[in-house]
Structure formats: C-alpha cells, structure tokens
Length: 513
Ligand SMILES: *[C@@H]1O[C@H](CO)[C@@H](O)[C@H](O)[C@H]1NC(C)=O
Ligand SMILES: *[C@@H]1O[C@H](CO)[C@@H](O)[C@H](O)[C@H]1NC(C)=O
Ligand SMILES: *[C@@H]1O[C@H](CO)[C@@H](O)[C@H](O)[C@H]1NC(C)=O
Image 1 (cartoon, rainbow, N blue to C red):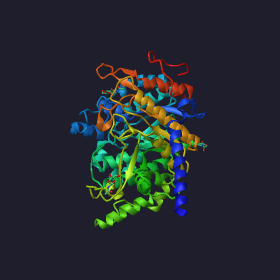
Image 2: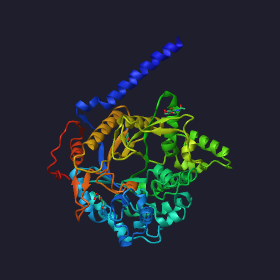
Image 3: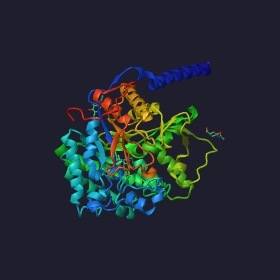
Image 4: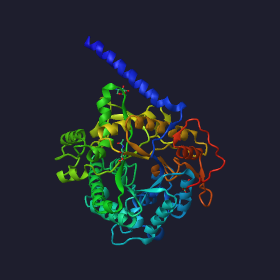
C-alpha cells in the first residue's frame, strides 16, 4: 500500500515537474513579457580579449601574453591577443556600439600589468591609468554605468613566476593592486567585481591545461589556488567596505561561473549535487552560506581520498577561524556567469585516470545530452530550463542573494544572420523571467559579448559577439549582427517578444544615448 502510494506520489510529482518544464520551455513564447521595473541590461568583455596593445605605453607581460607567445599553437588557430580588437585605441567606437544598443551598463576588466608594470605598487603606469580614465569618462558621458572587474584571468607573468595564486603572499599583492584601483577610479565606478570565475582560474589554469598558466598540477594546485583566491577576494571586499564604501557608496562582489547539473535519474541526485558543490559550492559556500568554509561534502571527500593515497593531511587546505569569518558574507551580490548544463551519473565503470585530481576526488561523471541544441563550442549547448533550476538553487541554498547575471551568451562560427544566438538569448531570458516570477531576486542581465573577441584557447574561431568584426579591414570594422538589433529592441521596450523581426538595414543611436 505504502509502495503504491509512493508510486502515485511520484507520478504526481513528475507530472508537476513536467508541466513546470513545459512552462519554462514553451509557456510565454506566444505573449510579450515585461521585465521588472528597474531591471538593467548590459554587455561584457575582458581586458585580454579585446584591448590588444599588449606591449604599448609601458604595459608588462601577463600570463596570456606569455602562453600565446611561447606556445602559440596551444590556441586552436595559433592566434593571440596582441592586437585583438584594439579596444585600447578604438574604445570610442566601442562606446558608440553600446549607445546603439542602448545599454544601461558595460562590464569590462582592468589589466593588472598595464596599470602596474612591475606587478607591485612601486610604479604606476600613467598611460594605463589614463586609458581606463578615458573609457570610464566616455561611458559616463552617455549614462552607461561602468561595472569593473579587477581580475579577469590576466595575471602579471612575474607574479606567476612567484607561484601565482598558489603563493599565499598573493593576498598582499592583490590587495595592493586593488587599493590603487579604488584610489584612481573609485570616485566614478560604483560596481566592482573582484574576480571573474575562480573555478576556471583554479581548475583549468592550475589543475589542467585548458587555461593559462596551464600548470596541470592536479589535486593540489587547484585547491591551493581556491583558498588563496578566496582570502584575497575577501580581504579586498573588507578594505572596500571599510575605507571606500563610506566615501563612494559603491557595491562590490564576486562573479562565479556555474552550470546546472541534472541527475541522469533519481538515483544520481546526490551525485549531481556533489558536482554542484565541487563546481560552485567551493566558492559559493564560503561566501554565501550561513556556515561559511568549504562545503562539508567536499572537505570530507578530499580528506578521505588524501588519507588513502598516503598524504599526511587533506590536499584541500583549511581556513583559519578568522579567515572563515572574513570570507563569510563578503559579497554585495551574487555575480553569475551561466551558459549551459550537464547530466551527471556515477557507477563502477567510471575510470578517472588521473589520481590524485579533483575529478577523482569528486568521483562523478557528466556529459551533455545529444538532444540539446549545439553552438560552435563543445561545452555550450542550449538548456534554458537548466538556467531556471540553477537560479532557484542559488536562491534556496545561498540565502536568497541579489543575483546579477554577469555573463550569458552563445557562440557561432560568424555571420550576421545569427538566428541560433537570438533563439538562445530569448529562451534564456524567458527562463530567467520564470525564475524571477518564482521568487529569485535577479536584477541585471549581461550579454556576452559586445563583440567578437579572443576566445582564450579557441582563439578567434568561436564567436560570441553581438557585433561582428571584419578582420580583413584595416580598422577592424564592427558590424551589428541580427542579434544586436534584437537585443536593442529588448532593451528599448523592456520586454521579450519571441516574434519580433528587426529591420537590420540601419543601426542608429536613439535619443537620450
Ligand atoms: C577582434 O580582433 C580579432 C583579430 O584581430 C578579430 O578576429 C575579431 O573579429 C575582432 N573583433 C572585433 C569586434 O574587433
Ligand atoms: C554506467 O553509466 C553509463 C551511463 O549511464 C552507462 O552507459 C553504463 O552502462 C553504466 N555501466 C554500468 C556498469 O552500470
Ligand atoms: C533584491 O535585491 C536588491 C539589491 O540588494 C534589494 O534592494 C531588493 O530589496 C531585493 N528584492 C527583494 C524582493 O528581495
């Protein structure tokens, strides 16, 4: 009887889930949906991906300059960011594109080695400071709010040679850099992001070869990196809070990357949650949970494995009590970069070849369903309901934070008719509106990216831009794709209409921008 009752309950629950999914996928496609009052729209880029001018006016080498110059064909098309989109020289055209789109804000990052060529505060490169002053002033002139990331992956090469994020002294180096940034730009910049995507910085750069510095010191490097990065982030948050917030009144937070992980079947529910803990919880739990510290399941798993492998202590380093307290609550908002989802499963046949490694510590495998529609990037398939579920998860598990979507976007191989990108943006915005209706406090959305740019290991092969760039033209002419016209319409009407067909003949700047 009890058994039957459970089956009925299960059926009811799955019916409910199915109808929720159906609503997310198809529901509002036929009506026009309004965004909440005060909701903000922007686009984003990162310094190394667009600035170029890699050694101009006193800029020093960073880890991406070093990697692309010393091992060029580690990048898919053997390219680099030496010139990139030359935004160092063409920032006025960049701002003009933002005015065409009617953006509320622009998210960009600062190059540490452009501002501090020795990596340290003994020499400030005035030309570098001037460049960012020009960009910020140009934005403010047109009422576009700058959202500034202090660190988006381009560590000065000299600091890497000193151990980079595995050296605990990086906390001081990063704090010194941040103080100079706040002193120079804090009067005009009201939104700060300390770090972009620690997960990629540490897992890919230190535990793998898929991002600079490509150290591949698995099971050790990524965890040392995670700890130092969290302490550095929190210390900068506290300094801003104490010394600059009273003067300038800005907000400061962190941007985490996160995919949704769906269990292949109910029996893998715990495994799927473990994936989320290792990917997102590793940073979100110390900052946003009530308890602070690394997620308990992660501490347990790494400690257990470490012991059986003959280590004298867990490979996941511990925080002191003071550090746990300092990190807890050290973000004014939850910055989320989200692109796609995965399916998780676990069984005896899974073989993790690298031991020790964080993959082996986790012990769960995941994949992308072949049913999901593809982009130009192997890691990116369109799963709008995964976005909805992740937003609910963050709201429920991390204290209902104010969530700012700091990146979301879709890659193609180029071309102005980018209907797949348009479908992706519309479906993801629809899912986000569902989440807002169901109680998630999402207040801003950032499309990645303003224009095509250097897509890290994928070079210039995979394109994420609302604007396409003509490489063969001497001034790197930027032309709006169809998606730029659609995004412009979403912003100007503050609404989502799946059936809007833009006139793509003329892009112009509307009044007031
Ligand atoms: C950025 O520069 C690269 C190479 O110079 C080019 O392939 C890409 O299309 C450019 N994009 C923009 C928006 O300038
Ligand atoms: C392990 O899981 C995969 C994916 O679900 C499945 O294809 C495979 O048959 C499973 N192997 C065993 C031994 O259960
Ligand atoms: C959402 O977050 C903003 C910014 O922190 C806050 O002002 C607002 O009250 C929150 N809204 C809700 C419904 O909690």
